Every structure is written in structure tokens, then in C-alpha cells.
Image (cartoon, rainbow, N blue to C red; front, side, top):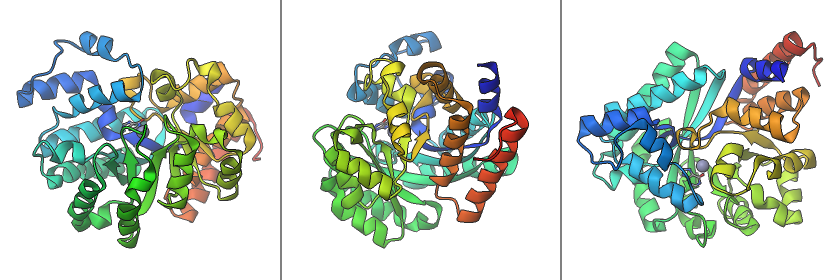
Length: 343
Ligand code: HPA
Ligand code: ZN
């Protein structure tokens, strides 16, 4: 166990499913609430942590959006972003594809320019000071209409060169991806790649729609794909990565305990699985904590942890030669740490 925790710490990794708003730690939430004079129903970090008990995705999202209320100024988005990068530098994260939910902020009167420029400032500093590269994913909120998503896309167009992909998140039940087909087509025509949350609480058919109609390059979560064996075949054949978030899935009661999580089955089936933290400040675990859960509860071995770290880069939107150099680096580190030969 000690060896594997060392290995997890030392291996470079990419994080591909992370919501910047979900990295708002209780301490920063309290500081920003005070600074910006925003009423929140908590007095202390402890009270906040006590409140973070969720029944399902919906009950989590209520607190997540409440948390976003304290983010008002460009500097708030910058502080939020750089705090996340500083934290994951400790986990040896070397590349991040960062999601943000601008509709949760523009609806409160925060200009889109403040949101994105604050985040970009954090990303640039992370690159220069922490040696962590990153790309940005703008997510549409699926509980809002497609027309609102189209408005958002228009707002984002001047920042086209700073946004790599468009995503889809928030409430999933009864809101199929097909409702967003038009705006995703427009986004692709404008040059964005696409990803979408699907098959977290929603059925396998939503994953199929995300692949077939929204033409996504990755599925966020996707754990319910197993309900449709043909879909599983298709995901394997097309090498579509699933960005899985084990601790998130337990906290939101998708599975009742880690030993029940289906990531072991998905991995063994040959799906292109990656490990991520989703909303670590709310779920109490960053990326390495997620890896440790797999080791402690699902019997993941050194060679599998190494493969998952390689997958994280291979599933990213980095260019092929950068991906290859990370895979080589992982092999070198694995060999030094474990005496393991490249697979
Ligand atoms: N699912 C859907 N929407 C989200 C999530 C999630 O896990 N985290 C933040 N927004
Ligand atoms: Zn998510």
C-alpha cells in the first residue's frame, strides 16, 4: 500500500473532469462572502463541511450554485483558479482541462469578461510558476434552455481562441442531450471540440445521444453505459474516453459504497477510463485521493494505476507528440519507482 501511494504521488497526471466552481474550498468561500458582503447560511468552515451531505446530484447542485454566489469579481475567479492549481501541484498534476459554468455567473450580473479573464490569469500563472498546462471547457447548464445556451455561445465567440471545448453539465434527469443538438452543432462549426456529462444519473441512451448527436470527444461520467451492451461496444470501438469521478459518485449516491463502484468492471471491459475529482471541495477528495480509493477498495494494482495515468494524457486534447512524451515519462518514473518495464 505504501509503495502504491508513493507511486500515485510521483506519477504525472492530467485532470480532465474538474469544475472550477467545485474547487471552492470552505475557507475561500467564507473569505469571499465577507469581502463581497454576500449572505451565506454558514458562520464557519465546520458548519460548511457539516452541510456537505448530499442525497443526489440535485441536492449537491443546490449548494454548488449557492457557493457560486460569492464569486463576483475578476480577482475572485483568479484566486479560485490559482488555489486549485496550487493544490493539485502537490498531486503531481501536469495538465488540466478545466470546466467552468459561466451561466451561473452572468445570470447574477457578472460580466463574462471578468469570469474568463480571471480564470485565464490563474491558468497562465499555473503554466509559468507551477509548470501545469491547461485548457478551458465552457459548459452549458442543461437545466436552462437551448436558447440560453445559444446566447452563451455568442458571448463566448470573442474568446474562441482561449476556449478549447464546449461541455454540458448540471441536472441530468429528464433532460436528454438531444435538447442541445442545435447549439452543439453551432459550437462545432465555430471550431470548438465537444464533451458532455451523460450517464451519471441519466440512462445509457443519453450517452448514446451525446456521442451520436452532440459528437462529443469524451463523456463525463458515463458509468451507466453498461446498461446498453451495444453502446459499450461502440465506446470501445470509437475509443471514447469516460472521465470517471469515483469519490463524486459515492458522495452523490450513484453507488452506495466504493466497493460497489463499477469502474473495475469498466476498466476490465477495455473502456477508455480516466480518473478525476469533479468537485473536490464539495466531495472531500482531490485526484490522488480518487486514485487511492481504487487501490484501497477495488484492488487496482501498480500496472493499472500507471495505465490510468497514461490514459489521462491520451484522453486529453493535448497534441499527439506531447501525449507521447508524457507516456514515456510515466514509463520512466514507473520503472524507477517499481522496477516495472514498459507495457
Ligand atoms: N454533474 C453535473 N453537473 C455538475 C457536476 C456533476 O457531477 N458537477 C458540477 N456540475
Ligand atoms: Zn462534473
